[in-house]
Image (cartoon, rainbow, N blue to C red; front, side, top):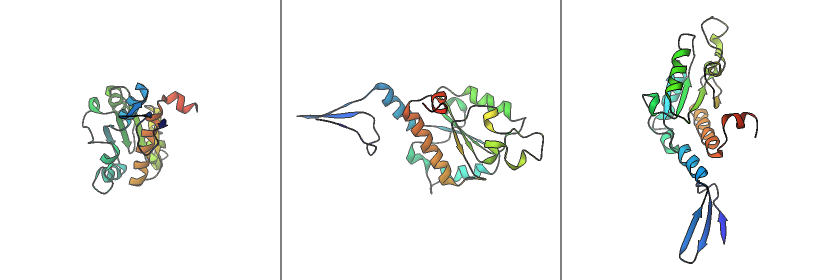
Length: 177
């Protein structure tokens, strides 16, 4: 008798019961995506007030480490996901692009807050604000708000985990496949 592992176990595959125990059968890609989604190391790119909300998520009350997002990395070479929290100005856009390029593949991006998504209220008042992070680098998950609540960032991180577990590429997700 075999049974599919359900979402409570959070491990991909099927359990086949045998007289002496059981065997878990799964595809290697599913196991790799599962492991990758549960051990993401974030790099923070906080330029404005959303950085404070990010700090709250990393703190003891919300503790994003329990979801597999361990200590924030200080270098892009050790990070899997970059969290853009705040306004991106024209002078910072090349720096953001350089940080993104230095990250190892696969790499993921979360745009947090109105400023990172669309330039926010500052886009219309000045010439130097970029109208969203997606004009500089590709974004996987958007977190709406000004600033978004810590719960919203946690939801975005869990959404990113689900996207990684699905095994689909950015292009496949955007095209609805």
